[in-house]
Image (tube, rainbow, N blue to C red; front, side, top):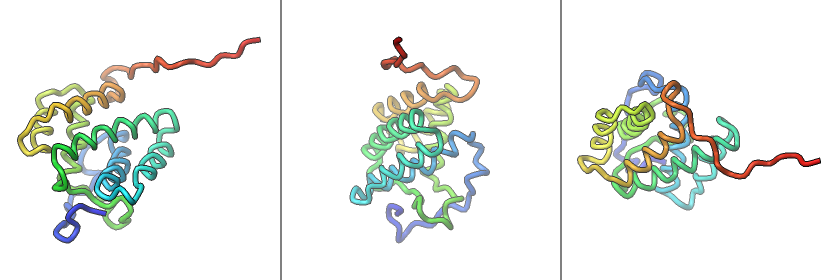
Length: 167
């Protein structure tokens, strides 16, 4: 489901021409399901977001990705409200396209994951239409710290409990 679906014409830009890495391309369907969930809570699209994420990255990483993205989308929805345009994740014909807002969101994450602050700042400003929302920035940076781009530093190991076999 798209926000403002009656007036929305999908961008003619194809997703694969945008220049994202494979991890970022995998985020798009998860983001779309999460955006659908915030727009239509009765859809329970958050469940599909988790399922897609776990299928792509496995349970440990997939659930962490979905959790961090959900926090990011929540802050984005508070900053932008219902004006954010996205493509229905279940629309097979439009799946290969990307809306301008989706593209800007992925560029924001792309730059944050690579610690390219000026470009990330520009993407945040464009996404929020001029307001540098500190909550959105914080969630984006949390995501980037947990899932940095290859070659920019390793993700921090989990400090959770570890199981071991005792004989």
